Image (tube, rainbow over all chains, first blue to last red; front, side):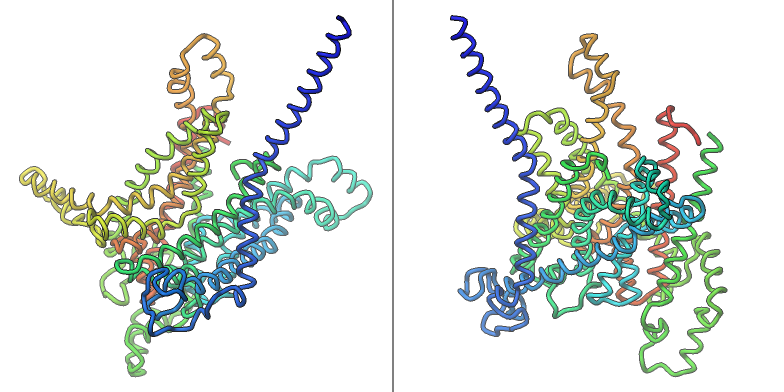
Length: 300
Length: 334
């Protein structure tokens, strides 16, 4: 009897443990699912953008006089319809992905390279350097991203490089602030003290100890800024201040299609959808990663 | 307290000056001579020289800079190159349109965002409620306002013909009636003007409000989550208070304090949003004015618009900082 009872409880505990393990797996899956979905969306988009010459059914600038403003599917050749010049909307959106992702990734990389070292130096050195760096970054922070990018792009003129530069500069203060706040916590850690005791100089401490420990959080938040950058680029192009036509970008396809929303809403609908999916993908990844990996960053 | 206020003002002033300097120098490297832009390529050299002199562009840059700062602080931004009349007049005409839009969008955002945020926080253990709400917030955050605006226009203006496609309504008329006292003598006309304004305002406010609601709902969700884990909530529950009362009386009030701090961020996002929203809905306002001014190379106008935008953001943040200290007495006035 006693033996049987023991077996029972043993079985029970084994079953419980298996159930708990399954629950944990489920929980883990549930938590990682948004990251996986977002990453998959982002990867697909990068692949589409990179392989645009092979994937796009037609040239983005080819004009078909026999198919002007055709609705999706009405001409077999044009899956998502055509615009006012008879250009294939699908091909233009596929090529437009290049501009959006290039600007999104390059401007965040620019802001990272410029902002992170400044932020780390400010956080580690403190004093006057910190005051100077932070006041400058506060000044830039007074402008919303789109407004600052708009000012810079207006001053420099609309082109791919200038757009990257403008959005990159507009995003820089965000990285400065984050890097500084991370550096402020890291510099108080024991391993920094240990490194200093071993004779490491300021530069070495910053490059070998502070930066690697801040990197993780910076990359997570960087993903979120890719979404901001893509949205800002679309906004600039929509306002006619981005890449000049005929080069397709999602924002200028949408802007050009605006005049035809009465007859041909598909031009604006699909290009806008592309913007939203791209922004959503990076928001999803960044958001989920942040909640999952670094609770310190909640609300950043 | 006085010290705290002074310190805040002292921080805001150099920020404002710095931001204005950025605007000034960015506008000075603009491609193209404003006089050529204004008078065309055929203008004679004398006429161009005359124009440059009239605009004060022949003075040293430092003099122009100090002059710009001094005049801006008195809201004197010079004359519009295209229209001829003072920029400040133009701005004061456009400002009410933008203000109305931001306020209406804020109402939409608060009405949609705050309840969703609270509901999502209170039901965070129930994935069937929390997840769809969080997805909604993420969608709102990812949806460009100009796209949502176009979709609303396609459905409600073009297909259903419920709302106008362009314009801002008779706001000037309504305001003139308030100023002249006609509100009381001709209330019917006034209501008609207000109705017209609201009719034009609905779609833009919904578009901008919805995208802002996403931000508001996320912030109120995290504010609620923070409040709900406080000791006084546990005390309220422990003394047997009903859950509704705990939420409405204790949690909600305290949640408003962290929510207050986001008004600053909110105004910044909303003002950026107006640039895009006003362009999509072809509505008069500061944002549309700025975009048009940039397109027309009318740089006193563009400079004036950006300066006003920046001033609003910095001043609102300053006021919020102070309000925060008033609302939450625990904040030390360092």
